[in-house]
Each structure stands twice: as structure tokens, then as C-alpha cells.
Image (cartoon, rainbow, N blue to C red; front, side, top):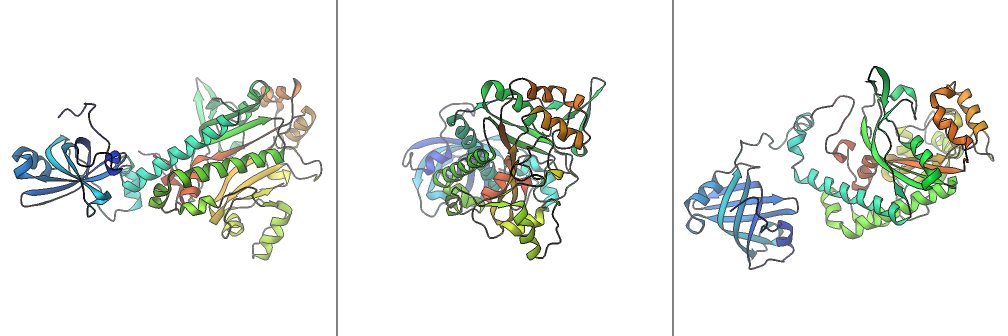
Length: 436
């Protein structure tokens, strides 16, 4: 057999019943292996599933049997034979092999049962092959596709912001600085400011790109590098912004639950939970959240930001996300528009996921008039010249607009009910990990 041939079939197609009783060839990696006498049972996996292969010495021959019985876990291999329905076999089908060859036998696999979390992170490049992480990565791909399709269907354009910038979007204390040809520059915290420039031509845009935050946080929901979905819309209000988020999440949750229930169950999420996600979501103004949290025993006062523990308390019994909105302007970003009906608060909205998974979206109406932006920047002691191009957007045909930022990994963590955000991305970057 030639491993580069095109006449191989996927294991998933076998498990679907498409090849029952037929002669096929498959290729992949050894997931499990056991030998008894002249019979070797191997479980082969590819990206679509796993299947048991029975290699009999008197059927496949000495060379094939030796190759099968000598294979290690994660040996890459190919097999040919007849597909047989067998309810005792994993997946309900078995390959009765007439041939088996190793592509690369390799060395004994270093990962065994009951390894520490730190060890598994050290060998993340190998642990990605585990069945659980494989399914999480497949689910992440589907979620990301559905998000993109939602926006394309809704008339949005995808745009690409710079990753290297000269200014902060979310505060200078969390910037990663770099030397840009002898001049200081930074890894982007957000592409929002750039997308605000593009809406003057394309009106509705979205970005899907990495963002970087140098936050010294050791929590189950923080990454130093994450993927950021950031829509920005001309002629949108706070209410329109929130309604868009509701439609987006309802669409993605329902598509995942309808199209991939087995995948969700495999990683620990009941599809019925996602089918319960329906708009409209509850709205909780900051001014009502504070006394509610005080009643729950938190020593939080007006003017303080709501942290992870408080978010958990507000959402632990919820079945759908909750909007926490109209925060005091003192601790929110400089670009958020003050609510003319509630002075001192901004037209902000943080979307908190159910069951204590925390904030997954932060959004707001943006300041679109020059005088207000200049005044806010002065309040926060920001130099207007550091944001010259951004400020100029308010001088040439500015319009009301709004947008939001969604952390892909936080969304995946909630939708799949994961214990830690590090499993929502192939190679997590945290305060204490930048390898592999």
C-alpha cells in the first residue's frame, strides 16, 4: 500500500455504514493494541473516528502480523480488509484485515494514564491527539464556522486589523511591548479602533484575529493570547448591539445542538442546554446588580467593577446569558459613550455566560462626536496626539455606531462546559506557559 494514495476511506464513513461488507483501505494512528496468540486487535484512529482492526496471522501473513503486533501507541499505519458489522466492536463495525503496514513505528509514546496537568501541558504537542482534545478542537472549528456564517448571512464584511500597534485600546498596563525597528510598539489588545475606521466605507464589519493581554492572572478563564471576534456596526445603538449578540448566540448554540449532539455529549455538554439559549436574554443594570450582590454577602460598592466571583454568583443558576449593562464610566474604556439618560454611566453591556462561566462578550456604543471624545480623553489624562488618527474619525462624517468583542475560547469553554479555558485552544498561552 502507498500511504499517499487517494483510494483510502475515512473511518467515519465506515462507522456510518457506507462500506459494510466491502473491501477498503484505511490509514491513521494506533490508539490501542493487544495481541493474543495469532490474533492482534488494534484500534486505529483518524480525524473522523476510531475502528477496531482484527489482524490474524494466518490471514494477513507473517509480515503484516509482525507489524501489527509490534506497533506502539501512536504508530502511524495503514490497513486493508473487509468491513464487518459487529455490535461488540467500538462503533459497531470492525475491519477484518488482510494487510497491515506501519508508516512510521516511532518510539513508545510518553503519555500514559494518570499524568499530571503540568506534564500534559509540557507535551501539549502530543496530548492534542487525545480523543477529548480532538473533539474539543472539532467543536471549536464548528463554532467558529457558524459565527462567520452568521455574520456573512447578515451582510457583514470580514476585515483584517494590524497586530502590531502604537497605542492601547484597553489600558496601557496590559500591553506586550516590542521593539519595532528601534521604536516601541505593542501587540494588539483589540482591533476595535481600526474597525471603527472601516465602518465609514463598509458599514458592518467583523474581525477574527488574535489579541494579547499581559494580565498577571492565574484563573481558569484567562489567556495571554486569545482569538477575538469583534463586530463593529455603523448606525447601531446599544439596544441594537445587544439584540445582534442575542441572535448570534442563539444561532450558534442551536446549530451546534442540532448538528453535533454526539460531539457535545462526548465533551460533557448536554445539547438540550444549548437549545434552551433563546433571545431575549435578561438585562441587569449595574445599579441593580450592586444591591443584589450586597444581599448575597459581597462587600462591593457602587463604582467598583464586578469581578469573577460576583459574576459567578449572578449566573450560577441561569440557563441563558445575562446582560450586565450601564456601568459607571470611571472604570470603563475611554471610547464608550455616556448614556444621556443616565449620566455617569456608559452605554456598555457585558454578556455573562450561564453556570458561572463568566464574561464572554464586552460591548458598547462608541463615542462618535469629537467634543465628547476629547473631553473623555482629557478626563483620563490621555494625550490626543497619541490617538490622532482615531480622533480624526470624529471630524469627517462620523456616525453613531456600536460594537462588541467576543473571546472565542471563553465562548467555547461555556458552550462545551469545560473546566478550564486552556483546553479551548490548541496551544494555550498563560502567565506561566509559553511552551510548546
